[in-house]
Length: 109
Image 1: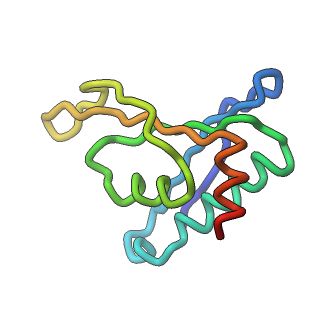
Image 2: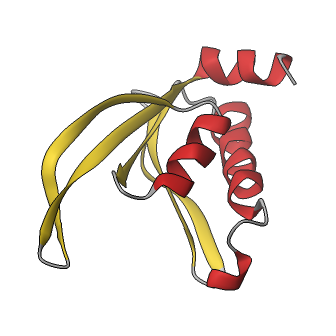
């Protein structure tokens, strides 16, 4: 079905990287990505007390970019031509969410 996880958890700097994958195309567009992202972010900020969660996503993958923005992530920059897919180079978008932004996202719901 899929997975959502925190990688490279660093308790000293209170940060981690987020990754998610929905492996069944029939499940795309059902809101599962947003729900899973919010669950992992709740664990990251409420339980682990992290300060920052970041992620990287290939630039043409617009659906997850919208999902991440909906969940509070901000685009922080890009790594140009970092992915070679189907004979073409693509940028890697770098996104991040800070604890204070997560908290304000919750209060706006």
